[in-house]
Amino acid sequence: MKITVITGTEVKGCTYHIKEAFLDVLREGSSITEYVLPRDLPHFCTGCKTCFLKSEELCPHAAYVRPIWNSMLDADLLLFAYPVYALRTTAQMKALLDHLCVHWMVHRPDDRMFRKKAVVLTDAIGWVQGGAQRDVATSLKWLGVSHVKKLGMALMEDVFWTQLSDGRREAIIRRVQGLAARYKEGRPACKSIGVKTLFAITRMMHQGMARKEEPLSADNQYWLDKGWIKL
Image (cartoon, rainbow, N blue to C red):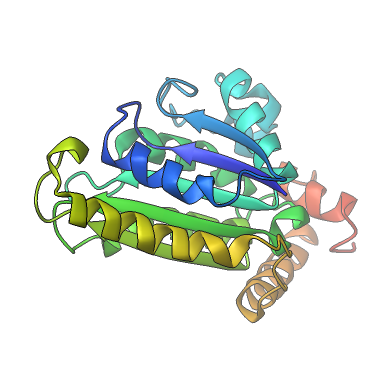
């Protein structure tokens, strides 16, 4: 099984240990590629819209973004691991999501994403982590990922891994590894009803716009080249 890991912090603290506990269950027989942010994507999206209007290959940060995206396309399982900052995902994770918007269903989706499985692991001092998880889960939905599982770890005792009690660390690891065990078989996801519906709606949208455009936008040309719409 091929696993691509996106870690939303360079700090080797709670997020690191939780992520490693998850991966320990799957290491045997798996190929794991990890990207750590912001180390592997040190730039925010500038809003130049070059990717939308021309090509993602011309993004000023393509040298950083393309390897991550290609790894995601090649993977069987996507793992996003990050701490919760101000009830949301980290800024560096959001920077990656912004760069990937060009591959949303309303723009230029890649159908290889439709049968991917993804896991979102978060950690915070308390239980309120839904907003931070939705930041990534929403992007995954619009990228066409059919299976997204979210799991938040409430640290409760402290924000430093070494300051947590043995019992708390063991409970966290046990819960995370229980989730990881569900993915050992490496089966692809079934294309979900949600993805099918979203694709159908956006296909009708592109079909309608393409008939009125001259020349075609980069998005509609992509859909035409894929054979998803007709003129």
